[in-house]
Length: 109
Length: 113
Image (tube, rainbow over all chains, first blue to last red; front, side, top):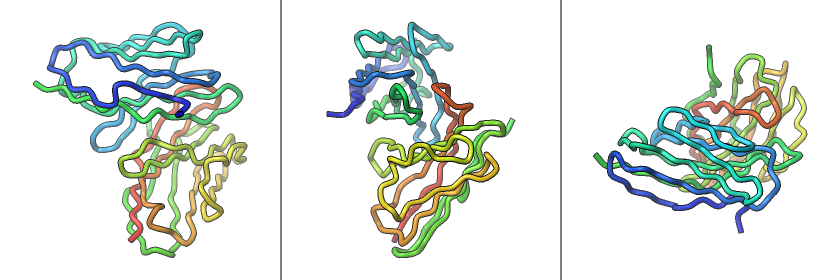
């Protein structure tokens, strides 16, 4: 079993829909990252969080440390949000990222 | 300011040849990470540097892979006697160290023919 599990694996939405991507992990962590990988391959770090909730524009990330679960929400989705969203955790006592397999999001106009 | 840069952006090499991939981190970032993404696969950790030392090399897939960092700046990932399964995008990231945001470079796409 992977240490970091994401769901769904693929997600197709219509423009304007509210999107939720889930991440569960099985190890103790010091922080969790949400990353965005565009079709061209470039990776952008969206959020790093160790507790609570963060918001940036239409993106919201939450984490529940006790339940070992995080969610990424996109409000009012747009075709330019189409990308692969990757959850990654930093294990406690380490600095390396352990990655989920990613969620491919397609937002249709 | 300048982000993380990597060179070359693309590299095609014949099986059995050695290759060197370069990463220039953001100035002042003490931590540097190498990751690999094979086609259709997720990202996997290779090695990380704190300063010029590598506390965690656990992700290097074989002894054909090595990396070094000098001057707490540029890092080179070397793959000796390349194999077709080494074909992947090799990504570098840097950070201020610790559980903080990592900044990714554009990657080097390596194709071994």
